[in-house]
Amino acid sequence: VMTAYRCHGHYLARGGNSRAGMAELLGKEAGCAKGRGGSMHFYDVENNFFGGWGIVGAQVPVAAGLAFASKYQNKNAVALCYLGDGAINIGSFHEGLSLAALWKLPVVYIIENNGFAMGTPLHKTAPTEDLSIRALAYPMARDVVDGHDIFAVRAATYTAVKRAREQSLPT
Image (tube, rainbow, N blue to C red; front, side, top):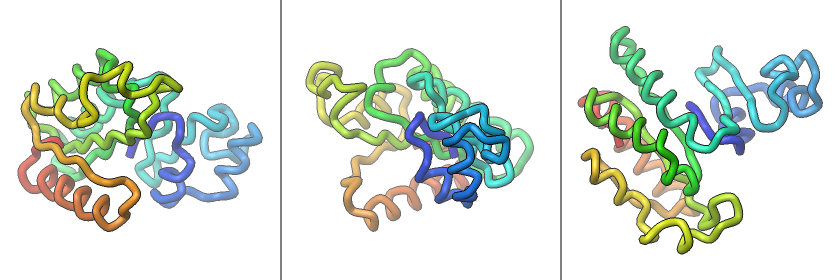
């Protein structure tokens, strides 16, 4: 799992220790990144949590790299990459999706669209509200899910992970 800088919930969901998370927030050595990451850069290799990334979109090609490593090493693991709607206009987003499709990598890109890319309304940064349409350029499977419906999110994630694991295809 990789995220942008809103990584706290993802870290805990991957099995991160809440005490280590709080210590990280306070810059303590006992933190999950030894106090060096602060709020935006949690990291926990033991639980396959490869961090919150402070550079918009930087985690997208790195997730492709993790998926490539999994495929190359026959680990049958799937990379989940969470990103905000602002990252879809960054070059690394397109590079990551292009490589994922070209090399048939087991990676799932999850766009958490809150409608504001760093405070800029979506209608000023994208010509459509359906951000999944970008996947068609590569081409890869896509879906739009109501993020407030936990069961819909779970079902869509399950389908995408199954596709990645069984067919080595990105979503």
